[in-house]
Length: 285
Image 1 (tube, helix red, strand yellow):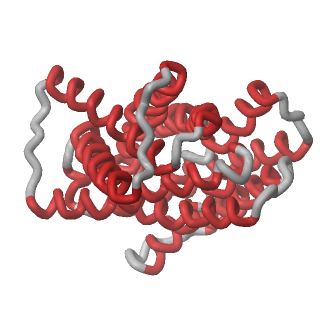
Image 2: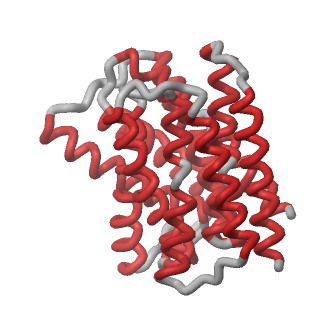
């Protein structure tokens, strides 16, 4: 039960990510710059934490190759397309669409790894998808392009979640694996940014505070708990538990952006919570 609670706490913290990104966008930072600074600051914080806790940085060649591939796909591209989506649609809608990724996770686990999908897991998916659909009715789609960007993240992040369970780097300490992922993403996006001339200098204190919040709260804290959950609970269950994230984004948007609390928000959130309960029971069985 503790593992379940930790993943839920992590998902709630992660739900504030689109809010912080929305705070940065008005300052005309490109999506590529946002990805670079998020993971650069994250890598710096994690480097200090790992040194203080005296964890080992040692990884194998195979682990490095897998970390490189899935960090760029799962972290870099996911956050890049999320940032792009936020240019066109609201934070709540972006995160709601993004949370179609558990469907991708479950499909990969069923068709590639022959995981059994009992009726409770299927029910949890139906409840989750229905809940997210109701939540998407809260806001109007301002741009179809933003929806496409958000849909792309369901695939990139779904692949990433499965990789954290099935690849060799799953054996690494969570903080160490996230450090290498963050470092790799920051280096790759820095190089791309230099060649495309799309990096902006971080010279605004308010923007820095938002990046620091993204790094500490929405990456180190929340992602660390999610990856811990993936190792302990499995990809499908951890991704379903993470459904608290879009609910958090919607609720936070109500208070920050003064959005109305509608019946769709209430029913959608309840369905997501019921889907979590259904998946927990189904996994125990």
